[in-house]
Image 1 (cartoon, rainbow, N blue to C red):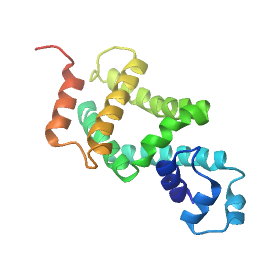
Image 2: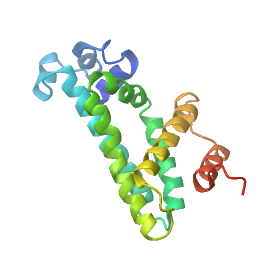
Image 3: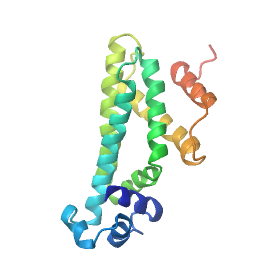
Length: 179
């Protein structure tokens, strides 16, 4: 049912999607929908929460045994790009959450950031990341991933080329400095 909801919300938007659209895509009766979800908003919320869990899990698996923060960042971004390549509609869905359910929208980014912050703090303790506010760093890095993914995964229907990832990582590791 969540896959059908993802496809419907991704194609028609939250306000343009009906429960009938979701049940037709899922090939189930409307009554079956109500066994699992009391409303369209409930399936929307569960979709955002479930895909958030899946995304975080995919990234955690991809980076679990990497030796340092630079490698974690690179592979974490690659895992993010692969995930959104498989769930392209989630870009539209998450952005709609800002208007459909602002608390859910904030939860999505805050929950993702909380894990990111913990990883950055650990890297700071190991001396791998500068002593800057890890919350600021997390949201900056999330913004980079979000927009690079939008440009090279969503708009191009592929993934960023190696040169794009290399430039992105160079910026992340060295910033705007010439040195």
